Length: 228
Image 1 (cartoon, rainbow, N blue to C red):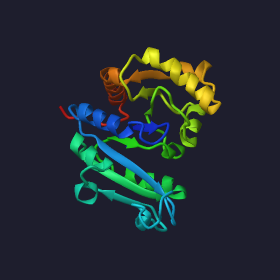
Image 2: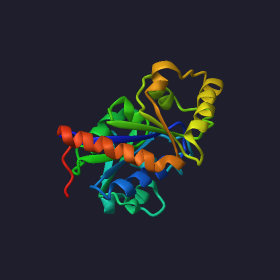
Image 3: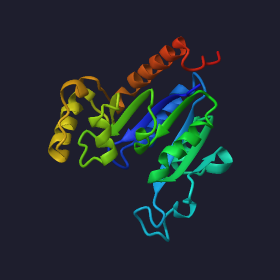
C-alpha cells in the first residue's frame, strides 16, 4: 500500500522547510509513527560549491544512494538529525544527481513501513504525487527556484506556509505581489482559489487540517489505520 505522503517544499533555500517538517513530526507523532525523507541533489564534479569541500560529492555514483536508519544518518545539527530529534520513527536520506531523483525517491519510499511519511524537497514532485503538498516561503518570496515555480504553475501545492509570525490574511497579498514583481508569475483564478494560506502563527490550524486529511484517508482505507 502506498504511504500517505506530505511534501514540504520551499521557494528557495533556508525558507524554514526543515523547521516546519520537524514541527509537524512532533505534533503528528503523538497520533501515529511518521517517517521522513530528505532529498539532497548534487553533481558529479560539484554541487555548486568547491568540489573539494562539497559535502556529498564523494557519495555520488552511477546509482542514487539511500541511507536509512539512525546509525546511517543521525548527525547532530544536520536536517536528518533534527528529524530524529523531532520524533521520526525512521529517516531516509536520498543522495542523487538530478537524473537520479526519481529512482532514489522510489527506493526510499519502498523502505517506508509506517504508512506515513513527510518528504523535504521540491524537485521530487516531478516523480512523486503527494497527498498534500506545502510550499514554505517568506511573505516576500524574492526570486523563487524553478522547481517551485513549476509546482505553482501546475497547481501541485495545496498550501502556502509563511515561515514568520503574523496573520496569513495580511501576508498573502505581499506574497502574491512578490511572485508577480520578482518572478513575473501571476497567481490568480483557480490556481489561487485552491490554495490554503497559513503562517507560523497558524501552525495549530495547519496541524488540525493535516490530521483531518489523515482521518479521511484512514476512513477510505487508503492508508493503514493508526494503532490506538
